[in-house]
Amino acid sequence: MVTFVDRVVLHATGGDGGHGCASIHREKFKPLAGPDGGNGGNGGSVIIQVDPQVTTLLDYHHSPHRHAPSGTQGMGDHRSGSTGADLVLGVPDGTVVKSPDGTVLADLVGVGAQYVAAAGGRGGLGNAALASQRRKAPGFALLGEPGTEQDIVLELKTIADVALVGYPSAGKSSLVAAISAARPKIADYPFTTLVPNLGVVQAGSARYTVADVPGLIPGASEGRGLGLEFLRHIERCAVIVHVLDCATLEPDRDPLSDLEDIEAELRTYAGDLTIEGGRVPLLERPQIVVLNKIDVPEARELAELVKPDLEARGFRVFEVSTASHEGLRPLTFALGEIVDKARRDAPAPENTRVVLRPKAVDDAGFTVTRREVEGQGVYFWVRGEKPERWVRQTDFSNDEAVGYLADRLARLGVEEKLFATGAVAGDEVRIGPEHNAVVFDWEPTLMTGSEFLGGPRGVDLRLEDHSRPTRGEKRQEYKERMDAKTEAREELWTEREAGVWTDAAES
Image 1 (spheres, rainbow, N blue to C red):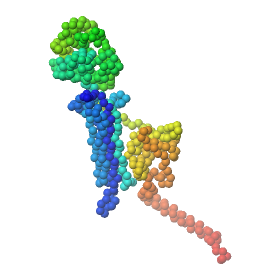
Image 2: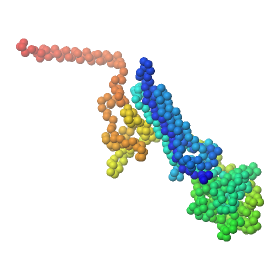
Image 3: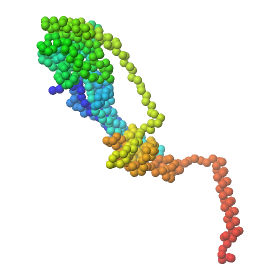
Image 4: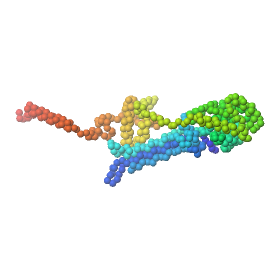
């Protein structure tokens, strides 16, 4: 049965926003008292947050699909829907959030650090919020937006100051048990340690953590043994301790060859250099060599023999025995000094900068692209945050809602851009991503008659002209009218004198 999980794939889905309500207030003597539909509630978000009480990702291994609550629909009498609660998922300190292709999205270090894995959808507006002087009683409401979906990879990278590496059965777990209060499983067979073990060491005023990872063997980078899977837990360490077994019974092994093999595997491992504490490759960090099991006479002789060679390579070497605790005190104090120095030299954490990204002057907020697909003809693809959001919010079974969408797109400039791109009436237009786009045949807005006045649908601005003429304008209009009457009388009298109106019987 799995008890320790340090890597999972999580499928997160934010809650859907509630739909807005289309309602008309009614009461005695006021059958049509105006719109009173409330807004829909926002959906909850899925948030990954560091929890000090969580030490493994086991829960998400068994339940990888997580969905935040959705918002509820708005109601009449200006009652808004309830907002869905955020779903907060606790993870251990040091968890790295990645995309499926390996891109680091967030490095969660420190209690309370969080990352929004899937944002909830916004609730739709009710018809009360859509009412205006020109649209006094909308017969529609906006739909709630669906929550976003995202697949993320959670990787636990243990936060430890000292990392113990070496062959299986080299005594790493015994060393952790000897210098700390941790009690990992210890046995006399290889690969006893299957999961990383942590221990806290107190050396004088220095306090630091030690991580023991499962043993490495030659070919670990190719999948032999337990591979390099658990080396992610030492990516944040300040110092690497090579634990070498001086009492091994294998004839083809010795401390020098073991060190070379482990260094070769560490060199092969490519960690995340973008996370906190992982910006320096493993082999470029301070390293110490521990010659273990010197309580065995043959092992002590071998340790004294290889120590000069190791020191010649630039390593600090300590001869220890986890059984008799010989040499452990100098080792713990030396590690404390290195850890303290690394902490002092570490750059101070920078304050989070507020990044302002102003909108470009020529940025219309959307793009129109002409595309030609072999066998399917030509279509025009509209992409942009606003057009796509408006389409998601539109109830296409309501003609008034569709007209409202057309007005919004026209005001944004989508129709002008379609004309400029070469679209004509009847062309196919798609709005949204390719896998879920809204497809329709484009019918440009007709511009005839009163529509040239620029008024919205259903409104004639000529009827809205309430301007009053000035006294001078009235006097000029009266003078022109009197002149026209005088001219008409003179013309009629001239025609009468000329006999144009003479009756044929009288003549």
